[in-house]
Amino acid sequence: MKPLSSSARRALIRFAYLLPVFSGMLLLIYALIPHLFFVYGDAIYNTQSPFELMQNTWKESQALLNGAEASAKAVMFSFTMSAVVILSWVFTAVYATVAIASAICSCIAFSHRPTEREANRAKRWMQFFCPNRVLYIIVNLLPLLPAAFPYILLHFYRTQMFYDMSLHHMGPPDLVLAAVAVLLNLAAFLLLMPAQNEEHMDMFRLYKAK
Image (cartoon, rainbow, N blue to C red; front, side, top):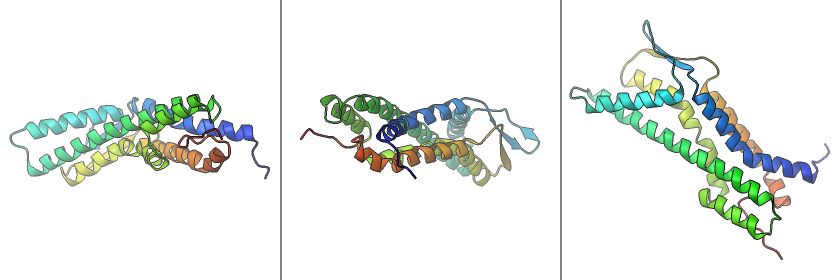
């Protein structure tokens, strides 16, 4: 198989650093669309978006915690789901911050020669938000938690509140889409690491003029 040309590799590397923000935007748009609903017995609950579901879960948890007659199981459910809601929002914010930093800083760095001050300054800003490759890989995994939120909620409804509920989707599950996005982000980054080194386009390495 004929190896890729330098221009093709450079284009793929640029795309790899832009991919997290593109996939994040697609996941965000889908998460804003109501497409989830629960069935409990004969009752079918209103269709919600994942963000609405997190908001309603937070309100329900706080209401249970503030109630005077909440059972021990209800209190445990409320504390657990409140923590999951907070973590989901934190993970979403961290991912968005790093994805935007990756897109902006890589565009600036790659528009200059690798040894120029402007390129290295953009890389330092990138490393301020995400100091190394290992952390970058971990950050790309973060969308999995908010995408899994409906399943986590369903699990604790069943195990702590003893509700015989089922979860239904109108369209593909968020967790499947998030898993595909994560795999694409990581595959693009990891597979192109040798090319990043060869083309001097590694955002986690500063190049100095000899």
